Image 1 (cartoon, rainbow, N blue to C red):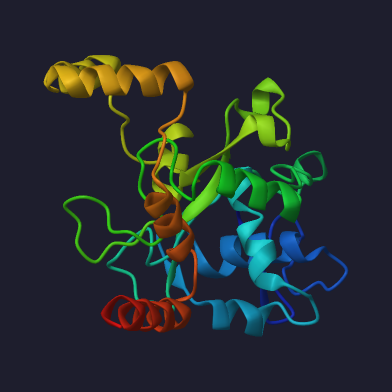
Image 2: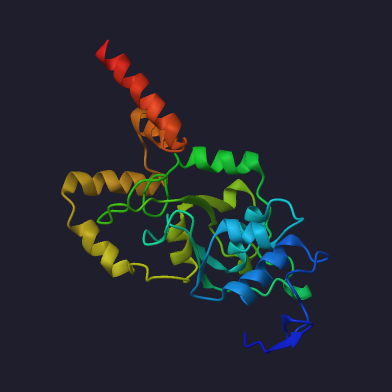
Length: 247
């Protein structure tokens, strides 16, 4: 969206008359306007800068994350290893949530109970590529997958926020599905890889397809849950388990 700006009382104001400094606007709208007017597509920012700008509003970080389901592409160092831990990248602007007709874009509230159920049902792994939380992507040492929830059917098709229409995805697959970044493998490419499997693995894969799920051993389930813990707790648990196995 092309915007014109004018100088008004020493401030640069967009031609639509909206200013992210206006405390009467909702926090998500103010965050979106700040990203549009102060950061700009292709530029980086920090959460500290965002919090310093959007004062007097609660959960500013969450309001920023709420823009992603509305088509805004905001990358972290987990999505793009070249970023510093405190850097975020505004890669694309999505729905103009400052406009009345787009104010609720992407706001499909998922309860904490439903989120927890879906993650546990999917064994804390991306249902599309199989990567676990914070695991490195194959061939990309130093990367770390971030899990989120995606929809089986797109928003435009009337998807809901119920567990039956949700699945666990890593952030990368979630964006691939929405055609925001990258290119997904086509059916021919997938079929070539399936045909190359040994017969036993072809049969095993077929049972997974029939069940629409990959059965995991208890140790696989434990691994997925372990990867969800903060790093300091993972270190403590690793030391506890080492002591348990060496005793």
